[in-house]
Length: 366
Image 1: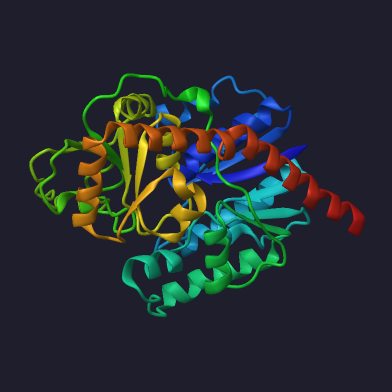
Image 2: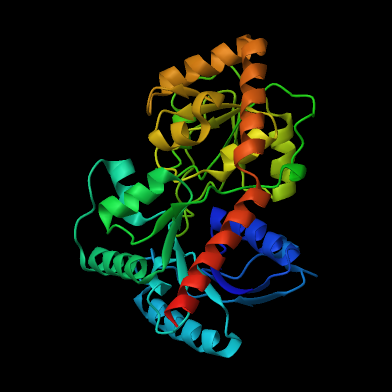
């Protein structure tokens, strides 16, 4: 089967794309991959070298959630229409909403990784104002969802969110994201620190909770420290025992996961969360914000602090640090759950099945 997949190089969708495209190519499928947002760094693109059956087309068109993206959206839609006619794929897999209704006669899947409205509600507690940009954004999302043959989401929470804020897909399915367990080291001797991953300025990732009081155990935070366009803004003051490490390569991050006994997921908006999964595959105990999606995914394989409460977060970190047996039990439960439910091989097989379903329905119509 030949699948055209769109992606972006800005966040976790690129890691998801790496796992999915590599798995599809290994199963003998042909992939045309188109990326948006910005050109990948050398580190980001390493996995594409020598990968058979993959035709990669990088672009720098702005992404649909960017406020000055309208011209880029129109131009990239035309680009995709021409490309589809050129390469003639069997199925279209869009990881952006705005391409779901492009004018080509090919079965299509739209994946709801996240969206601006559900992010805004999670962070601000209300829907965003209906500005001209937000009105256009909502139209793009609704049109893309409505024109797709199948809408996929990485959690039931995320599928429910697009249904609530836009429209109910005619066919919606959950396929959990996955990572390859063999990429991680769950057996390394642990050191004495808590790890968290997230942009320090991102109100959705909310890692700033770890800066709101003294910490008795060392904390290491990985992620961009400067917000794009606001590079001159002063960094927040860190309490003792907290280090801001900046961005790290995948290899550097795997090393940090392997040595961390505890991982904190402080997000108040998280449609799935690849970083907690990577931590679980490294046998870290998971300490998570008390939000529905984390309960859906991790159940009793994690422990939860009161929603957005830095004092309760500190209490739980202290408890796990002082109770190695409890910490190890949680780490083992998280590792087992990750290996059972969130592997790349399972994800690839379920996407493969989804592609065949939408392609076969098109054949029946024809």
